[in-house]
Image 1 (spheres, rainbow, N blue to C red):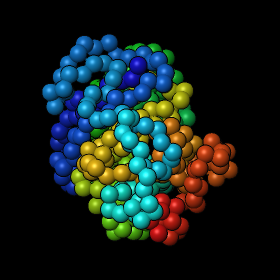
Image 2 (image 1 turned 30 degrees about the vertical axis):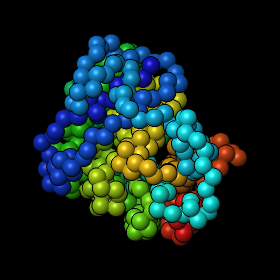
Image 3 (image 1 turned 90 degrees about the vertical axis):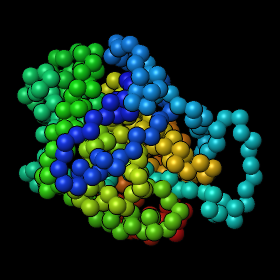
Image 4 (image 1 turned 30 degrees about the horizontal axis):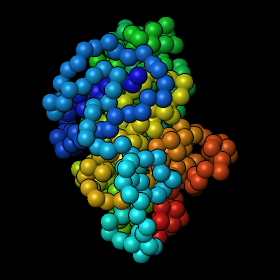
Length: 348
């Protein structure tokens, strides 16, 4: 079973400074679809309770909504709910305004990268603070391999490394996430931007996509939601995404499956799709997910989106190409070539 959607259940309003405060105040809490259960994993033994929206929820599941189940259509193509009659559409019709291109972006290694002695300092400090406060363990996330994972799964993996059981770590995730969010968002924007930089071409490409008027831009990242948007705000990228901002975040889902972290990331791709459909009813979606790890590629494919793999993270292009070959993945040398990116998503 999967861990509940903690961000939807009890995302606190945090006392934060500067522009990050305005960001938190504007973030909407849109519902998410029930996740498919790929693997059995330990869950927190808690009773039924009610979310902030009044919906009845159960431990081990994402919050139930009335969204239709979405079929896993061919990557990049419009998808439809089960039971809906197929429609034949001309090329001209597919180019009309009732088709929207949804592009979700990973954050670390895709849009931004860590630099210098203070590399990703605030985010790493938030991890260390949470584990120290809850378990009394003085550690960092760098004791384990964590690229391509999600924040909750990283917490579980690090704690298991130090002898904490998965069950105990999972049970304390809500407390640790709240501490991470508070630690990160209480910092100034200048502190949040320390040790991270926008990758070449990212700003121009996002601006071109936004100005096309035919794309919906969001995040799908393992970061907790306040941390992911906090980074975008601190680096001046926030205004290039949809308003209100939405996406799929590590705080939306955690299965406890630390061996196949891409499965959790696939659920986050689905979460973002559901939020986009709620914001744009009646639109047909062409879906792409951009990331720098094999986990991004596998997640996109599993969720029915076309993967766009960029070699701007720790994985080389050869490693990205070797992941799920022959399944339609687009490979790009980062986002430097805006024209090539627009062509890849059909918006040239």
